[in-house]
Length: 190
Image (cartoon, rainbow, N blue to C red; front, side, top):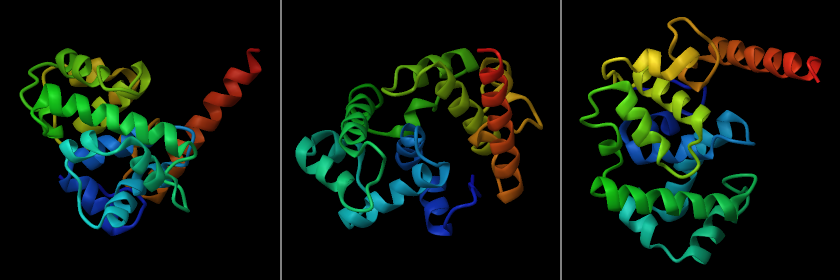
C-alpha cells in the first residue's frame, strides 16, 4: 500500500514500504505536528545513513540514540524521551515479533486481536492504538474481521478524525477542523 500523507514524497515512500518506520512515526505522533511525526523516520534514516532494523535500534547505545534524536532540528519536541520510547518499542518488536514490525499485524484474525497487539507497544494508549488500527485498515489494507468496529469512530468510513483519514491537504484540513471542534467542545464543558 502507498501512503499519501501531505508530506515529502520520500517520507511517504519510506512509511509505505517500512512497517518499522510507520510504527516509529505513529509513536512520535504526539505533541508535535503530524508532518513532523511522519517525516522524522525519514530524517532518522538520513542521520544514520541507512534504514535501521528493529534489532539495531534496540541494541543502540541509549545516549547515542538520544543524541541523534536531539540533533537540530530535533526529531521530536522531547527527543531524549522519545528516543528511549522508540528503543523500548524496538525491543518489543525484536522479542515478540522476531524483529519484524509487520509481524505486529501479520496473522491477526480479528480486530480485537490486532488492537491487543498494538496496545502492548510502548506509547500506544487506547486512543492511539485505535487510530493505528484504523490507519492499518483504511490505508494499508490490514483488515481482520471486525477491525472497523474495534477501531471505534476512527474506523468509520468517511470519517475525518485522525491520521487514518488523511490522504491529501483537504483531508488534513478536515481532520484538523475536527480536532479543533473537539477541543472547543471539551473546553466548553469545563
